[in-house]
Image (cartoon, rainbow, N blue to C red):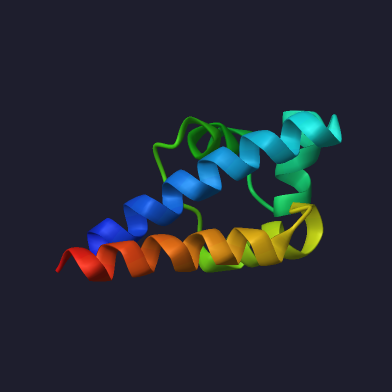
Length: 86
């Protein structure tokens, strides 16, 4: 079950991160610097192949995410859907 949560959250982060970067007109280098990660790690996040640390997620929510409440509501919705499947 934990794996399903992680995959779902990773998918939401992937979608929102791409949207945030496109809307902010930041370069990958600028985005990576704000998040405190290297450009390669950002590329993996953008591709949806990895999940970031909780620290990086919190930095994203506080410094880059336009609507952290919506992001968290999306995560909550996915968690509720997964719980209904069991």
